[in-house]
Image (cartoon, rainbow, N blue to C red):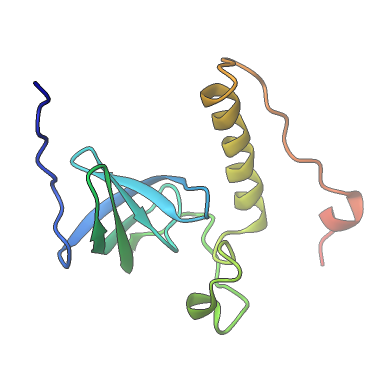
Length: 134
């Protein structure tokens, strides 16, 4: 007999969530009492307050209410309509932070899909001209 698991979040309620990684669309992925919650505009290593907007059997989505503990990689987006447009999911993440997160996504994919453990994923190569101070 299959065990029925109680879903620990409710639509419309607000929860404090620790974000552990980025999802495939750039949203923050965290857990509340072991239950996965996707929070757009949240970054790994942040603690955020989020309002649940959708609840499914195995995950929920939420809107960001407040960043309680910001990531050291959080920056001010350059675009004035960034939070309403949806065209650039990671403008609030520094370039160095973006490279670090994308490297982690490659590592995760190799382990999860390729079943390869302990691989050294090299850092992204940045052309010399781009590495110079502006």
